[in-house]
Structure formats: C-alpha cells, structure tokens
Amino acid sequence: MTEYIIIGVFALVGILFAGAAMVFSRLAAPRFPDVGKKLNSYESGEDAIGSARIQFKIGYYLFALVFLVFDVEAVFLFPVLGVLRSAGSATASGSILSPLFVWCELLLFIAILAFALFYAWKKKVLEWE
Image 1 (cartoon, rainbow, N blue to C red):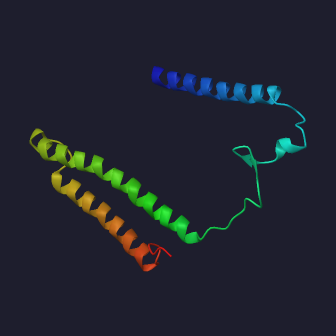
Image 2: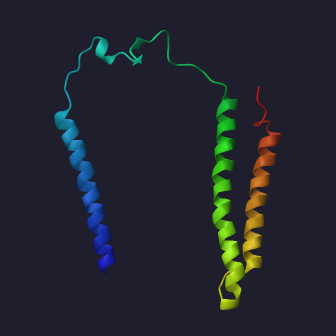
C-alpha cells in the first residue's frame, strides 16, 4: 500500500510543479509586446524573404515514415533475440518461455514487417522521384 502512496505523492508533486510553472509564466510574461518588428520572424538575424509556407511532396513524408517504422521495429528485434537466448538456456531450469514459442513470435514479427514492406512497395512509397 505504501507504494501507491509514494506514486500518489510523486503525481501530486508533478502536478503542483507543472501548475506552479504555468502560473509563474503567466505572471512574469509581458502583457503587451511591441507590435513592430518584434513579432516578425527571422533566421540568424536576416529578414525573411517570401512566405514560409512551402508545399513538399507527400512522398518525402511517406518515405520518412516508412524509414521510421522499420528503424524502430528493427530496434525491437534486439530484446526479442535476447529473450530467445535466455529462453534456450532457461528451459532446463523450468522456465515458462520455450524456445519454440519465442521463435514463433519472432517469425510472426518478421512476417508483419515483411507484409508492411511488401505493402509499401506495392503502393510505390519507396520510389524516390
């Protein structure tokens, strides 16, 4: 029961800290900023030329998302392989995880990745124009 009290105290302190930061920011912030050049955007001291709104091709975003998905999922392969190694050595000690179960899970994970890659390939997301 004391674990829940500790978690509650940490949650309460976090909420109070965030609330105090917002109240202090509201009190310390200037009310009426200058309307002139202060609100203009600039980069490295240079005035902006033209609009900052540029349309990029959607292919760039899709390519980046596919890369991110496969990059993150490749990172998840390392813990699974670690579990597979420990499951192989722990079967003699009566562990719940069998190496066959871990291999099936690993093959299912790789099959999902392969399906996603095949789908992205068919939708021509991987073609750079």
